[in-house]
Length: 267
Image (tube, rainbow, N blue to C red):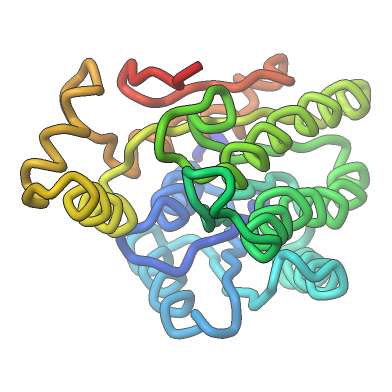
């Protein structure tokens, strides 16, 4: 019996085998939760692969649900589907996010701002709005929103719309904690630093191009800013998220937890 046996978790942004979403779903499933993983229609093949891997590795019940989190109607339908097939919703992990835009303020377009807002803020809280009524029916629940160190501080080179929307995510999560704490629903944020995923490799390539160095040198440069000397494994970020979903964390709400190996959030 795991700590989450009998619970149902919804995890967004879970379409990559080496991604954080899969690691989160795997951690929750190993504690006994049934899992609904979400992804956009364009990523259906990846979503299906991740779902099957969760089933194969844990034996847990897992389903994939197609949804564009920036579309409230799709969100409501997706949450309803997850609740119907799995029996309810107890845990929501909003992992889906994007980082479009530029670290040079005047280079950011309206499209950059709208894209980040649509997923990082509107999409996150559309999912919350869809899930909370189901949590209330179950007598409580746990919401864990994945932000970034960029939701705590600002660092050179990070896209402005990303920094702004991740800060907004942190603030609105605190408001959820205030409103729903008395109803047994916790709301917290996990703020990762560098994570060893395909996305980080793309970031290394961008740094290498900007600095005129090799990808290996760019990785070393990035790692030199992390006191533990390396990026996190997805499972290490997932471990913090799983804890916040368990009964042991039912008195923890309204906080932002940096999981970044001591890396600075900036100013």
